[in-house]
Length: 257
Image (cartoon, rainbow, N blue to C red; front, side, top):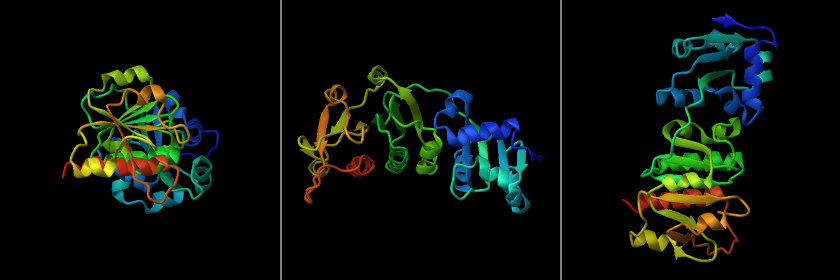
């Protein structure tokens, strides 16, 4: 166990960057997982953390399994842990893991494509829906909230570790996708519930989900093989993108049952 008491320690400086800068993980090649929920989810998927960091009060009561989870353990006073934490109520423990190596798009995987979805909460929620409904790949186009940023990690609640993630790619990279592309439109297209009833939703497929205000870009939508709309008898203009994603991804899963 390594005890750190200086705020200026290089490790603590690095953790502050990772917890407070949404793109620091790209520069440092590391990811900070704060809290036992994220850490448990990572371990359950076979992630080997580089080291564990504990607030002093947490270390004193940490079960042996936590103390043995990483090859190195670092303990800091509670006040210093709160200083590096990105949470209003610091979780008192976390893992440092290596950023997964950049990966190529898997051509035939059931995929969610995020086109400039900028809210981290929406992105994390969509990752959770993807994992829950059997989609194995999420591709984030440039302009989308960084997939491994602290806020997206917290909103994803562990979904990251069960998905093949491709972060920050260009439109051209999508040419590798060989499954049918589906997109949503508020005003036109087939009604989603009818496609489910008729078992006409392709699977595997790639759902294209767009910017919170502008939707999927016209050039990307034009390449979709199928455009669908979600019935909204209540008359709202549109749905939040994470809500629409959950409905669409569930429909794809239900159509296969």
